[in-house]
Image (cartoon, rainbow, N blue to C red):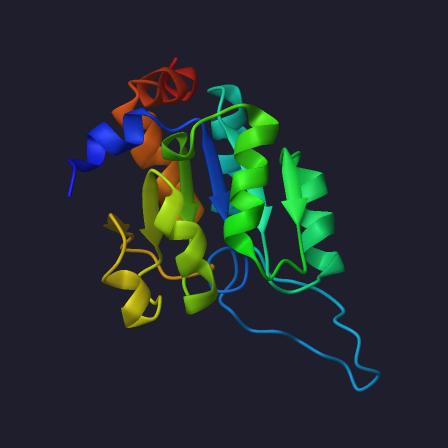
Length: 175
């Protein structure tokens, strides 16, 4: 497997699953079958801004249709948000064409079997610490953070550090 920093240096787009990555993987459903809200980590929200400021594109690809996810992505200013997607590999190919990037310039964060086809074709494959074992054994990087606890932030920092962009962001807050 290639060195992690070498893989991370190439990244221009970060794509991520939602349930189990940006959230703890729980779904709250009222008795009228509606999902009233989603629980997202603020560290991941800040990471979207860091990525954006550094020229990285951010994309959500979720297998579950969710208005809460769409609202959160919109509020954070993510470049693209797709929910209700079952063929994530096809969506990754579409995103590569849309942003005019190579597949090895895309990072993907996923936690379950539905994410494996997308992970198979990207340049950097990442998972939260609580991903299913069959995912963790097939990725380049397993975060020390569980889903909903800052996994996206961890991956963004890893990429920005490899690209030599993290210190510039940090220095904004130290000056």
